[in-house]
Image (cartoon, rainbow, N blue to C red):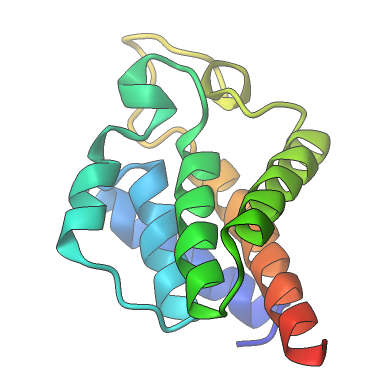
Length: 149
């Protein structure tokens, strides 16, 4: 799928369905959508392991949007034949770029309206769409760099 309106609309619809129909959280949504777009099957055990990765189990630490993408970078890096050192470098680069573009890696700082019992469910849906578009571009770039050299 090419970047642009088509991918944005696909991501928007897929995030909405995962949040509102499946009651997924951010890390799981990131993993599922990235795996679909890059045709990487995910074992059930990985999705089970990601259950607590939304702000470190609600502790409001590292954002699940970051965690889900980092997990995917590790999986996809191995598929592409990257060394552990290269995959670690890509994860660090992703975190640096995400922090630059979104101003933080922390759930408590990224989440709109913070945390309150009065917050509506799936408050991070628009942020998830933005983060996915960002993550998709990042993964496409490192995959393309691998393919060209």
